[in-house]
Amino acid sequence: MNKKYDWKKVEAYFMNAGFESRLSLMEIGLKFNIPYQSVRRYAAAHDWHNRRYRAWVKEKNGVSFEEHVKALRQQVMNRG
Image 1 (cartoon, rainbow, N blue to C red):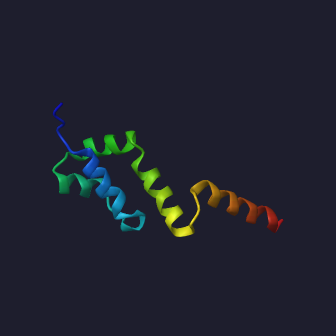
Image 2: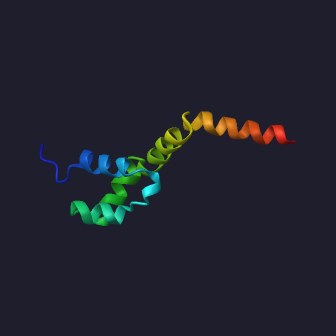
């Protein structure tokens, strides 16, 4: 099976850039010589942005995204 692009490598590059890097899909396309629309479709189908954000939340707060949201919700409830 011959794949046109090494999506694992491209995805790893995107994920490793980190959420705060603001690395765009357009920049990914230019770096790996992949049309923007192809990158956009692949990223959307594989949930790149959401997964990168969740990894960032875990790195920043030391807990999973779900646990972080639960703690925030509890803080709001305790204010009232």
